[in-house]
Length: 100
Image (cartoon, rainbow, N blue to C red; front, side):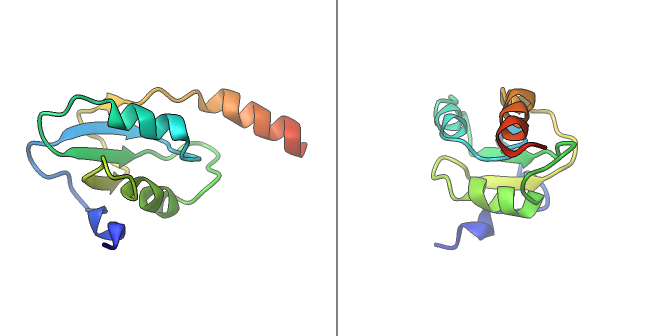
């Protein structure tokens, strides 16, 4: 199955919605998404960070590859649960290792 077909322009009705940067996608993100108690399909909204490491389409394709995710939407404003991501701490590690 080509998981890119999960990437849609709008969230279908009845979905449980989660948003996050997923920049990069980490195993902890996968575990958090798997652990969500769902009452319907799971839709993930890809947010745009200030300094992205990956393009939003690439991040959407990675998230769409997760079995627990039914739909992925790039950007937009939705009533959703924000996935906890300590992106600033991750960026500090990257800057330290790569001198940026």
